[in-house]
Image (cartoon, helix red, strand yellow):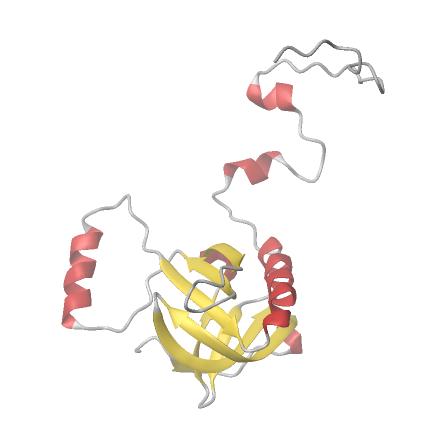
Length: 179
């Protein structure tokens, strides 16, 4: 794969939160091999045993999730969707890129799956990803501009009227229920 490069793994100076050895990387359904996944505050990186790998910048990561589907041939894994194109360069892919460039509305999407040999590490991997992703908010997300860790005022933003009268414990217990 042409995008695999040799580089040093993220270290403590980059805020390394999790280093997960023996993790298989799968790109759009194609296995890249087994290596070490590095989850750092600055980037998400994977390196195989020979030192070749890739790094993903958090602003390009649009989604990360845990897949607990055991019927999937990969089993449980960390799923990462990236708004970029990663693949082996070939004449066909160059022709495909020219066709895709004509459609400006479609963003390229790449799916990575990280399958650790130690499945008990999945929750810690996901938590580390959440912490790091939170450090890199999406600048194009309009909703995040309105919410600066203060109470969100629904009426001011949505024009809806909201009844803010507090409820009293038990006030609905004697209501007649029609089925």
